[in-house]
Length: 581
Ligand SMILES: Nc1ncnc2c1ncn2[C@@H]1O[C@H](COP(=O)(O)OP(=O)(O)OP(=O)(O)O)[C@@H](O)[C@H]1O
Ligand SMILES: [Mg+2]
Image (cartoon, rainbow, N blue to C red):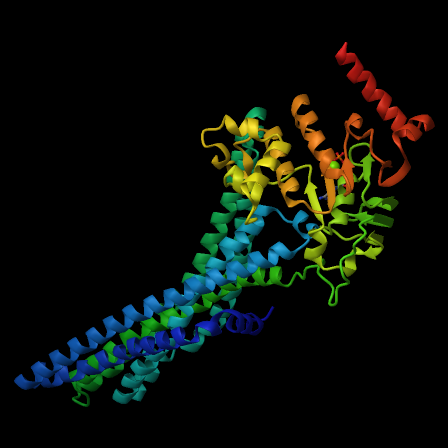
């Protein structure tokens, strides 16, 4: 990505809305920059009229003028910084908001390939480098360039030859600065990547803290974290050294120019060709020039650092969501029979479903059974378009689901998935998920059906007890019941149950199964269950193995055929029978 592309994008999408604020800030910066020139200009009368000339009236006006310039500079600088912070913080916030909205549109395939930590680092870390860029880049544009021009103006007005001598060394800097910029860019990029790795590691460690403690791998994790930190520290130091190298080189060149002027100008004053005031004024101007010049030099470093981050952010924005609503979506079907038609699918290059075909009749219950890894959960992901098949089609009511409105399609489903996410809010909010206008009676009914009431009654704040981060305050079975309550409340026409009651005790399971059975009446339902006793009564059982349908029929038919299902059933029956006796 070129500098131009990145700058145009930032300008168009993020800076332009703040144009008025930026314009005022820029004006204030210009004033601040101009005061530098004014100050150096006032040095001349100070020396020539006051110190050398001994004029009493000049003392007063020079003093007044100097104070005025300082007050002006103070107010301009204050206003400018506040305005810049306003625009800067808002731009960063806007970018974070946009990035999150964009990331939430991207499909399962994208998110499975990314670690949450790395994404967090991009949303939170990379966007903030933009804030640093702001202050340095825009103040450079406003204050520093104006300061540079006004100071050089003063210097040239005193003696252009002196000025030329002072800046004669500058061209030497071009090549080293270009090289340094490359170093800074490279190390910044490496630094950002390491920062992602560090956040990923932390995310994994805190998620897996009990596994780490149980397996005694604290030292291993600590060491891995330490290695990443070392890489990060090294990259940061190199980037900083590169950034600092540019103004440092300017200082050296400045010193040479200074010495030149001192020798050349010194002799002119001795010969009486120039006044002391002129020399002091010039000297001040040139001395002051180096400050904005160094800052301008630092801008190129800051830009390289920010660029590494901007490229990473832009890279994410450039990932187009693969699963979207078509331009003119077909109306949602009324009959909600489901058909998987020769579906091929794989998460990466390895195929998971190989031409999978089956139908689930509208209003009936269809069960999916089969060994772990057979692809049952994958079927649910394809039905809800969390992922799209690579071959074949998924249809609902005869309509290819890719022709439907995405939100509308997902609205057709109530899903209890194998690993439902709970959020760090109250149990009530976890069930409602923002649904408004749910009556107390309706909520009671759902709590009852999902068998939540008895465990909630024992909690200090009842339904308003916080569920903890990712629902960690609840047991596995309690979390599952919250997930079931969500699905019951959603009351959508198609029900997808993926091991929905696997974590419940026998008493709760019986109770919840009865509630689910009531819910299933008249709804198209797909059930995944390992415990075959729970799906015996399904209208149809589809037996899957390694991404294919190997058999289907009712429980009785499948038992009579003595295939995979009959074998699985017998195995379970034997173990369950054994524990019973
Ligand atoms: N996010 C993923 N990335 C890569 N491969 C995946 C992913 N999710 C599932 N798979 C693979 O797809 C295959 C089918 O997985 P799926 O979750 O559909 O199985 P399942 O039948 O639901 O198994 P279980 O009964 O254990 O839940 C597995 O072999 C698994 O390795
Ligand atoms: Mg599964």
